[in-house]
Length: 375
Image (tube, rainbow, N blue to C red; front, side, top):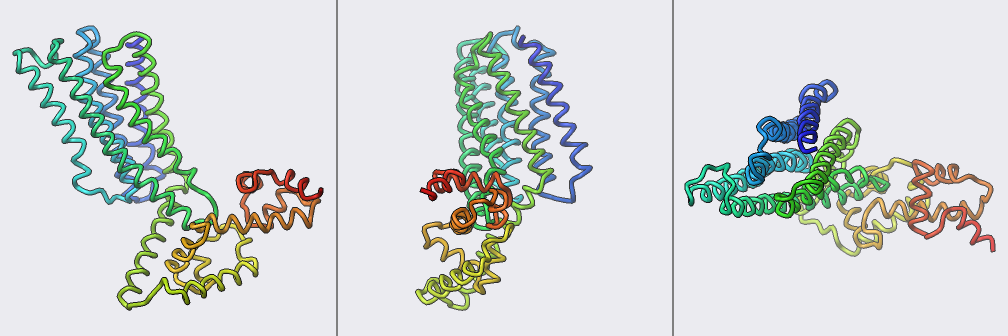
């Protein structure tokens, strides 16, 4: 069973690596960030393929468990590093700090040093199966976990920032397009945490871990390709550019010694926003905070800061709240209208999305709400 899984791993990693290297460039634009991420991902998958190939062709399992563990760790650490950096590169738009590049190499060097020291203590070859090497392999796995926890912290921090950027720019919830990234981060962490527990297991437990590992890597690859191929990456970049422009507006006003948080400014923005809502500006689909700021006539950063003083805090929540209030009025005044018609009239892009956010907000479906209002 283990040999079959190793062979499957070799073939699957080879196919995924070739797809990233030769298939994706056919429909990718000259995008430096995306291209760097795909090469980092391809590098990680290629190393995994090499690891499976070594295990399959040289039968390290037959030599003893420790030999297989050592080979796995020496490949898993750089593999996880490259995949983590691939996602971090997407999140940061290519702005990875030099010390973040070195987290993985330092962990690999520490793991190698531990195993070489253990091998030298009793004069045995590196791939020997001794109590010292077993302890060294366990300590090396701790290096692997520490490295992955560091990358997990960085990735989750950036993921939180990305979700906030989306919510502060677009008129509806779009963080679901980042769900694959959250799952991938957690998968990499769980796989690393399981290593010291499962490295010396065999049989069904090892097979289950192998299936989980290969399936998780395939999921990450599939979602990564899907994210790049759709307009999700472009939308994310648009939201992040808005954040940068807002920050630039703050710095420009700071240089001119303006006070953006004065009571007069807050009152003026609230009054302009109420007027915009009264005219039904929020009932159009696909608007962004950039559009609203232009129509209201205030800088984006002032509108963003004002929203933070409200109970909604974020642009998408604010827009959704007022759209739902408009939908409630239509449900009462036009009970014969379909949910799709009401969704279109209130700026929701689809009927399903309207029903989802309405239920989340009120605890009732649109039909249940109509029924409750008719009594």
